[in-house]
Length: 262
Image 1 (cartoon, rainbow, N blue to C red):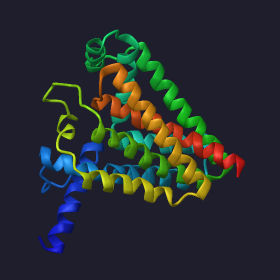
Image 2 (cartoon, rainbow, N blue to C red):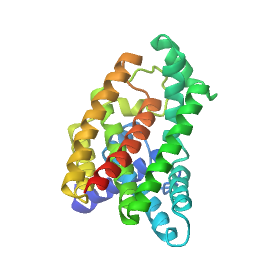
Image 3 (cartoon, rainbow, N blue to C red):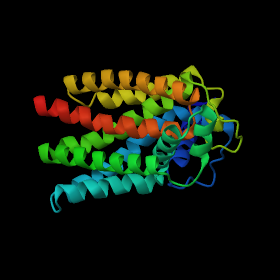
């Protein structure tokens, strides 16, 4: 394979990843199959970087003209519009299932129900409020830090969530599930590039902030995996969305705490 063909292949995989995670339309020449989607998992972190960057740009463009709370709200809205609330939906379904079911089968059945239950509604509202409040505090501390936090959190949270695919069991039998193809044939190259994208983003932070966030994310990933195993024996697409949302919130919290003591 020539260098040009190799670059074309990687761009193709990135576009597949972008089409999977966002509402941004893929070019018509991009063909999607299960093998491509598996390999595209290497770029899930970079898709998060794109979402975070666009959200940060909206925040930076508006923060001099609008109150911090409004600028943060607009930045959050950009993220939701770009993804179609993909991860937020997973968070709500996961909390509905984990909160309302007694057995793993009950929890999986509830999570598949499209109706929003009380556990999911509460989790979704609290998650959005937490993100908004933490980002407002970061914006008041330093607008540059707040925008950077959007970029870092959107990237790192997706790296952590996607990494679960490589080590855990997919527990749904439904072949129509959007996440089913990702549960097969994940390679070391995909994992290496995925993790590298998260590490590279951390390099833009100060030493203490980067180290703190790295250690917290490693510990949080372990905790999330243990909970998923105990609740349903593995993961589903919904639980990956929940993992992303939880990690994003914790990213903002860590950066706020570290920023306040520097």
